[in-house]
Length: 152
Image (cartoon, rainbow, N blue to C red; front, side):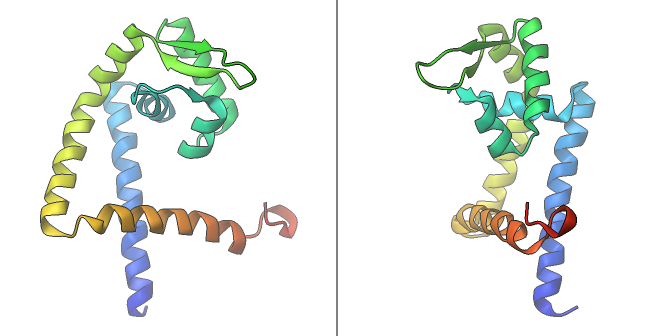
C-alpha cells in the first residue's frame, strides 16, 4: 500500500470505529441505533421532514417511517403540517426529555473528544472532515455501479 492508500485505510477504519461506537452506545442504552440517530437528528429543536432525516442521516425512509410510528405511539414525537410541505417531525416535551436523557452522555463524550482534537489539530479539522465525507459520498455514487451495471 502506498501512502495515500494507507491514509484512506486509516480514515475508513476511523469512520467505522465512530459508527461502531454509536451502535454500541445505542445497545448499551437499550435503543435501536436508527432510533437513536433519529432522536439525535431531532434534538436540535428544529422541525425536520422524514425525507430530510432519511437523506441527511442515511436511514432508509421506510425505517424512519417505522420509528416515527413507534415514537408517536409512545408520545415522544408529533407530526405537524406545514402548508404545501411534507409533514414535519418534532419531539414532544416528553420526547425532548427522553432524548436528552439518552444523548447527554454522548454529547459530553463528543464535546470532550472534539475539544482534545481541536487543541491538538487545527480547527479546520471539522471543515476538512465534512468536506471529505461529502466528496466521498458523491464520488462513491459515480464510481460504484449499482445492480446490473447501473449507477444508482
